[in-house]
Amino acid sequence: MNKLSFAIAAGTLALCAAAPASAQSSQRIAFARGNDNAAVSGSISGRQYRDYIVNARAGQRLGASLSTRNPVCYFNILPPASDGTAIYNSSIDGNDATNIVLPRSGDYRIRVYLMGNRNPAKYTLSVSVMN
Image (tube, rainbow, N blue to C red; front, top):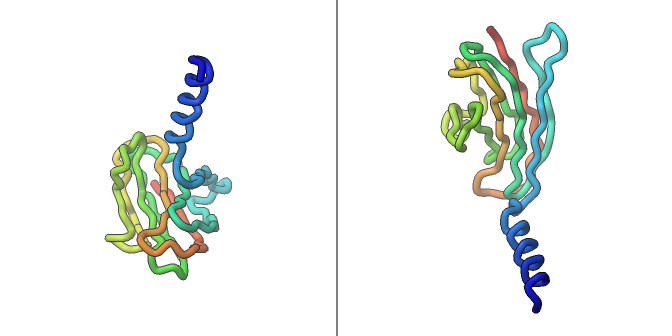
């Protein structure tokens, strides 16, 4: 194998290793004019997760509620620039988060995921942001 072929193969391998094991996605939640709440529906399976992005200001209150028939479908609320540490974890605190006072302004991620059991889950996530 010549040096160019080796470099191309190594680069391709590095790109594949850096890619996540399953497809992940995100969606920005937009509130209709005059509304402070919205709902989105989706489904995940296996090791997938889906992020819903909500822009909010420090001091506002965030609410999130997850409705699903899958008993191991949960969500985390991640603050702006999070290293993965959640300010709310529904697998511990339940699938209804109310009046979470936001510590700073920016894009918050509400990450819906499965824990343990990897059976597919359909869900509806309701989100509100209030002053």
